[in-house]
Image (cartoon, rainbow, N blue to C red; front, top):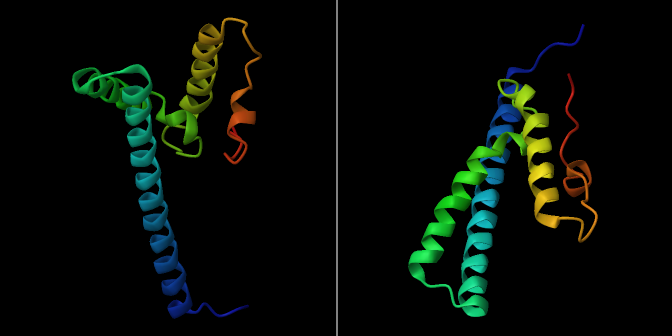
Amino acid sequence: MAKKNAYLEKLQLERAVENQILAQHVESVVRQYDADTLVITLHEEFGWGYDRLMRLCQLWNDRQRKYREAVNPNNKDKENEADVQQDKIDRVLTKIIRGKQELIPFEARYPTLEKIKY
């Protein structure tokens, strides 16, 4: 039977925590960059002003929270909600597209997400 190495286990745990923190930082930067470039585009291309842009940002943030579980399918507390939220996103996008192009299914748009396992 292999002997457990407490020091090695501690290092692995520390590395996992560091990787989680790094992933959170990357996500934060990407989300802010997406919001900045969206706001700039809407202002420069469509003439949207501050009040309208801030309203959009608030509503966008609300939608992101509403559908968050769709992209977090391995959250064991919310696992049963992931596929429901994914389906809701696809249904709303289908309404928006209105047959002008074929909807790329959720799983194809997010190929790096782990598949939902029940």
